[in-house]
Image (cartoon, rainbow, N blue to C red; front, side, top):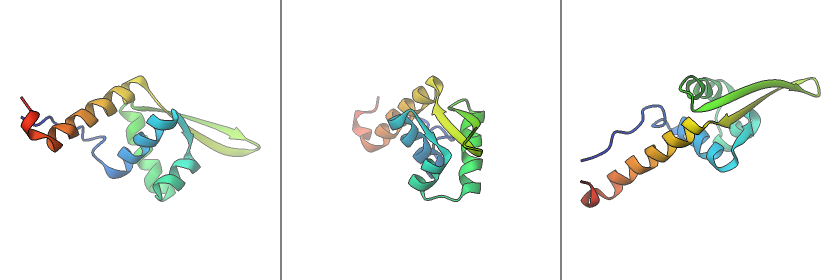
Length: 98
């Protein structure tokens, strides 16, 4: 009746990161840290989990002699996010489940 929720996306911080990346396509680590109000260490761990799942790509580079980390959502990540949203909708409207 209810669809299974993706355990990778069913974490508050990972879901927040994916939601932000879906809306902007790519973002710097600092932007994600500010928007999610998380610590650098926690955000780094969660970004790594999303990367290992293939949901995002992470590019590390230097900009004006400072390290810069850019996260980009992948097509697999977009698909997973859309499936997750549909699965959540099955919980919000159980009478329409088949």
